[in-house]
Image (cartoon, rainbow, N blue to C red; front, side, top):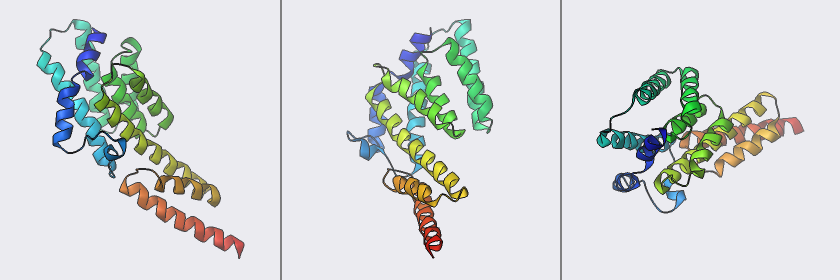
Length: 208
């Protein structure tokens, strides 16, 4: 049933595309998909996941006891993540995927949980698995790519902040500059410009 769940989970791309188009969020160009606010990117992905859930409910299929257990585990993981227990949620999502590797809904939620825990490389790995799946609809691919752009921006900000703490202002400046060239959230762009100003100030003081 894992494969069947996966097909129901992310297959209704027509419905998803219509919803995104009505909200003026879905375009054929990736740059238009990458909205300036991180919350908006999150909402795009959440909308797709929510719509997928509605497709499962509408299908009205009778699930086996094993699949009922998977659903209970999934709901538990979602509750844990929403309540701030992201590490507990990660463990549950990982357990689900250990026995249901084709359940991309769980994989996408695990990727989001990894991101929230600042496990950027792990998040990227999970997103890439879904992107590599030939059955993943184009609308889902674009949402994931938009989310990845923000994920990369968050990682650069984190690396720059660490470099600042180590007084490595040249390295921090380089990371902040990269953020300004990405379709990052407004919050990250503000942090990046402020960080660049601080780096330049500290480098000037060193030269005096």
